[in-house]
Length: 136
Image (cartoon, rainbow, N blue to C red; front, side, top):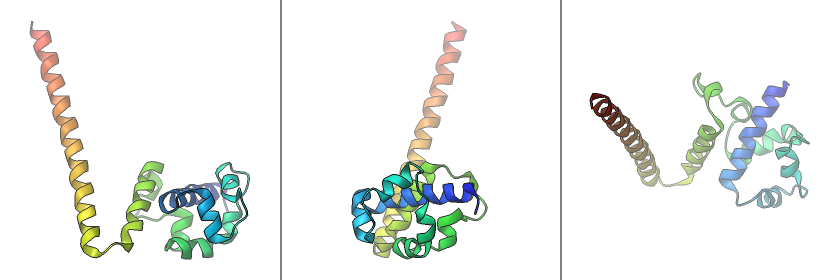
């Protein structure tokens, strides 16, 4: 297995742990892992998680292939760590009732659209202000 695959799996796994567990220690207790196991994963000292992919897949309710390379209809390689984190949080919402999950998705979408619109409005105002300054 390539170092790139191991690294992307490590990043994804750590993101899932952060999204679903209160702490690394809570995750270690839940899986019966020795203390400092996740710390060693974080620091790149161990890749023992690669041997645990079937168990981790079951624990996080994702396919092993998704843990390894996150296939997302062609754009997976372009996702940032922040985007992956948000995606994992959204995937975690699968446990919510359908109506709540729909409301969550609508709220997130509306919030993002509002921020984009606000940023565009601010940029337009700055351009107008710069033009007025030049005209004087």
